Length: 119
Image 1 (spheres, rainbow, N blue to C red):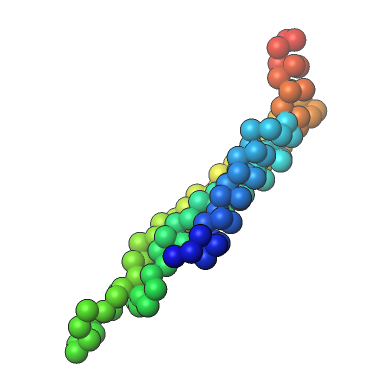
Image 2 (image 1 turned 180 degrees about the vertical axis):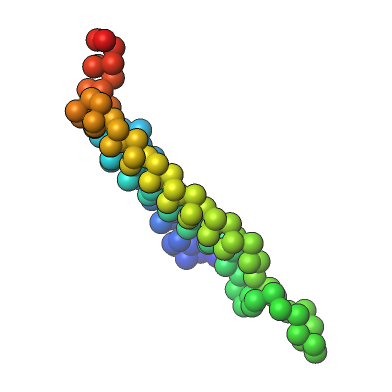
């Protein structure tokens, strides 16, 4: 396997770093949630990339076909579950940001923390 032939892993690394940067460096809570979503999408891509098997088929046993190569369906099932959890996490995060906006009048993390420390 050539290094450039593994482009999906390079995309994974780039998306992971973009999402990690947004979660760590941004002060806006909406931007942090978007970064978390990008981070999750990178992890999904990694799991789906690891499942790819050259010449693999669905794991259905067929009579008269010896030594068939099968793809593992478990990563797809895990990713479907992770997508549902990611959507619910994003919805909860957005609801919390709305409550923070109502309470503090801002969605900037440092401004809300400063208001909290003054009180």
